[in-house]
Amino acid sequence: MDVDAFPEIQNFQHLPRSVIVKGGGTSFDAANGAELSGIVINNIGQAIRNIRVHVVIFDERKIPLLNTSVPAEPEMMPQGGVASFRFQFKELFHEIKDYHLFTNWSFDESA
Image 1 (cartoon, rainbow, N blue to C red):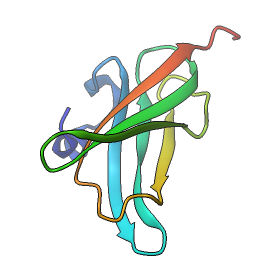
Image 2: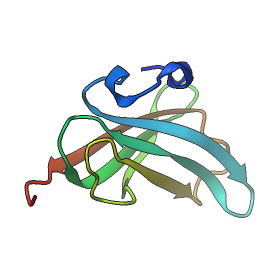
Image 3: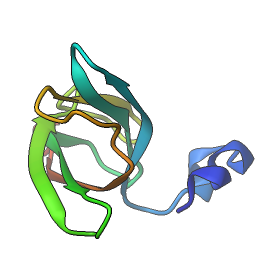
């Protein structure tokens, strides 16, 4: 799903039935390195937990530079819930331009 489709979505019924992860913005500061942040939307119809967001960052030749993961906040979400994430890369000395995001999670069957 392209980020341009988000303003046209009026409710969760128009989103695909999946856990959606979208990169919201990147920034670069010489003192702090590069940063990537975004959101995770739970639209699978059931609560989920242990949500981790993974990123693979590519260079200008599409070769992976690094990959890592962070937990989403909050790590548990009901159906329709929205979580956020933020990656901080002090070892990158340029803005992040090409990346791939994906999530791992498990069903929350405690309810």
